[in-house]
Image: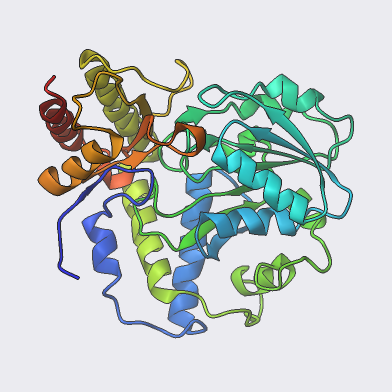
Length: 364
């Protein structure tokens, strides 16, 4: 396949930082090599800093963000458990699917796509839930759901949060929120290619781990003995060495910049994009006050020239300018664009280039 430069501004992977790319060229060690285990320990410590947590069990799951989601659910949900799930997009729907496969009684709390979930509705949905689950940054709609109010939840209810698109891009405060399980993905605001799912598990959640989860590969009873760094490392599965090199480097870049500085950079780029789109006469999709800076959704205009539609415009952006953006999902396929500014991609120059290219294509 020929090498082609891209400005990756879709909802998927962004452009990695040069230090991350360099890390993938390091010599590969064995997954039980002392030097690799030392690097894994340091990676886990960096994850704790980024998650803003002291949870000892914090590590990258070998798999993409969906593997993190499955690991979170299969380890704490038992047959018949009431699991309250906020649903205002594709990834809330996926949570429902995974919880149901674990034998849960799924209690859906819904909001229209493009609008946030009401935290009070989540808290009032069931008198005795085992788990309350919600997506922090809904990738399908560009909406931020509020997590902090869920700290005041019923006793015994675990709080499970999808932070795939939020970690590193907007404030994530695991300990302050009282979140018990949270997962993310490397390919969004951490600026690392896809392949790992950072996961953090509170002591309370660890006490509730199922004795024999429905997944062998994602069984925390076994994984914890490998990643904990305490005593002999019990073999579970072969860690993806080069991916962890990349994550270690990406977290280093993020922490060197500073979490607050990264949040501010994403916020500034997102605002620049929002303002530029509206100045072009386009309408943003997500509800005002809950729009993500790192993932912007905008309606495809109705007054396009006859030869242009959603797919044709995205194809021209990719073919003529090397800019990749995403289309809508579900009932909004063909009607919405999803524009990512995540990790190293969240730069003013990328926003300026994209707005100029889109303006030229649309003649605006």
